[in-house]
Structure formats: C-alpha cells, structure tokens
Amino acid sequence: MQTESEKNLKIAQQAFEYFTNGLENGNWQDFIDMLTDDFTFWFPMGKFHGLNIGKERAK
Image (cartoon, rainbow, N blue to C red; front, side):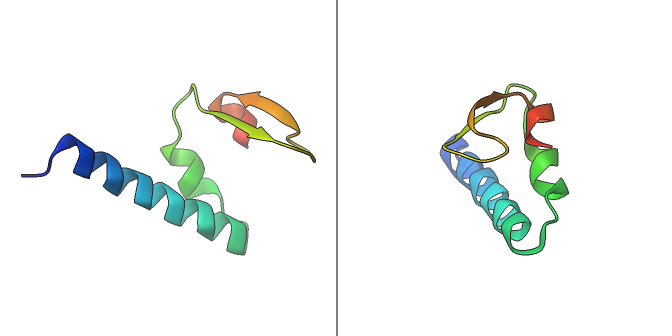
C-alpha cells in the first residue's frame, strides 16, 4: 500500500511529464487536465507575465 507521500510524488511526476511534453510538442491538454481550479503560477515576462490565478488562465 502506498503512503500519501508516495501517491503525491507519483502525481507530481506525472504532471511534470505532461508539462515537459507541453514544452516539447505544444500539447498542453494532459497537463491542463491535471490542474485544480485554484492553480496559481507566475512568469517573469511574456504572455503570462506576473501572477496568474486559476486553471482557465493556464489555457
């Protein structure tokens, strides 16, 4: 039986794989599908410059 930490790590590894695939081939849907509605990210420049809140902002 997996511990909670092991489950979380497996989910994080899958998300990172999907993120990497998005960078490589432009297909972000698998990564976006894993996000929660309160997803928050920050970019220093470009289209998403600054603080971005919400799954919809990641599209």
